[in-house]
Image (cartoon, rainbow, N blue to C red):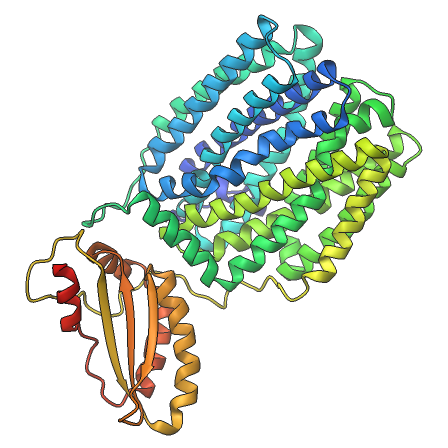
Length: 533
């Protein structure tokens, strides 16, 4: 982990003092400029190919849907493979897709369906890139400045909302839409070179890498057992479903609602990005005044009001400042959810966990774009956007119990609380399944408290990769309990020792306070019997 060198930079720019973060942040900025120039070019090209509001909105659905479909596999690969090489591969993927878009535009091969297909393929590349980059960032900056680093990432994304449309607008107006795709091809290759020059320090395990499907299973199991992550995923899905209305319908708002052209579309999108940058520079002050729960809730309320205000505004010049307010609201909620998800995940599963976050984000955006596009197609764009605003308020009321807590409650720092086991014979790392039993002898009057504690233990074991968990009480001996949990292979069991956190250690110490017989956990004969099968 890098420490922050002294600098006169403002607080919100502090992570840029770290050279490696600065280089990768620049890559992230340029990559997102490419993404938005591509989206703007694709969306505007679709308006020239069809007048259907549904097909125009489906451009965003095609861009976001791959994340829902491929988010978890890409997250698993990012946790298994070398993250640097995987990031280079994703950049190459995007460059190839930009080349296809360029050639298809030059030779007039694009129709609405083919454009959606190539937009979908581009989205696959983005689905692979986002989890690995999200997993890298927490390793580059100190934990107490992670929210600033993520804020800078969001600022980069929203700066690209300004730069991307402006660059795309100038190119489209000057030499043609196809050259936007040509620029993306060149920039994607250039960013690959920057990533190749990054000298990352990868942790080398003595154990074999996790299996692909096993890694996905463990990732899904961790999310199921993590209450903070479940709350964040529900909130992010509903929020991005609501907020997608403005982005998905912005071409329609610009062209039909305000009778504008590509410059009108660029102005509105730039105002949204400008609002996000303004609030991003004040992020450290907001975090001192408001809790994550308050920032998420207030942001949704203001976004609902401002998004409705955009389509109710009498003309473009009233709508533009309201779009700035929408960008400020959108950023405050998005950054809060992203930071909370990063801080709720340990490093070993961060890419998979963030892929779930990305899936909820893009899944909500894709569904929202489809729903609000359908409503707009049946009525008008004003009705579609106002419907999304009403949905946001109703959803906020329905998810009150899914709160976003502070990040001090759970300590995910890695620890090694007990020694690794020493079996009586050499066991191949791929042998399994492996069953572990732990015997507890407690005072019988504490049995109810012990059972409640073991409920937390169950979640901990499953998050560490166990396939199953059971607790039995001995009917003949009062206060005697047997805990059993099973891993797929011997390597998975050994890998568990790298996944202990400080909170797991505290829970283990709490269990031992109940434990009269403090002999260490042992491997039973039943393990050896299963290994021979």
